[in-house]
Image (cartoon, rainbow, N blue to C red; front, side, top):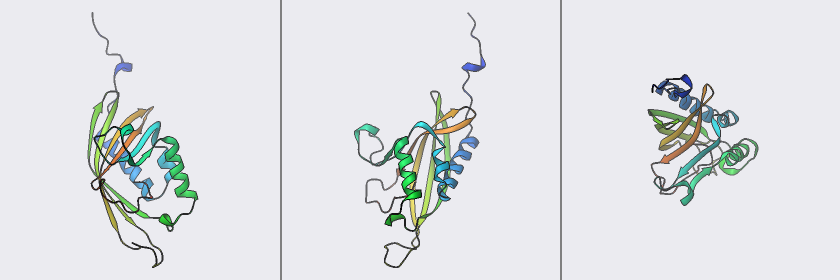
Length: 174
């Protein structure tokens, strides 16, 4: 019996260059507060989370952030359309993405990157930390999926290096 190498059985490769383009785009959208566009990078069933224990299953732990699609949309709405002290004025952000590694995982792909997110807020003298640049250092693990000709994020897990200690103002999207 011979096996056919029919094209529909082949999984299209996902190159590191393609993944880097996606991660760089995501970083730019977050830096420029184009959060409605950022939402479109995700699959409809995607999870965005910042765990405390990186080895515990999602359902068994508390997390700093644990957003399904509805919660991501709600977070973006609040950041863009409501006023609250922690983002008045809003943070200025610069994401630096490096060390991207891509590997196949079943029908999907995983990607991992090192990221440094620099955050700074302007404001009046009465607000704590105003004008200070705060670095947030993390490894970010992604589960990526091809949807048509595009690559989408099915899961984003942000592993802060200080995830088990006190966190400052994380009222923006990492």
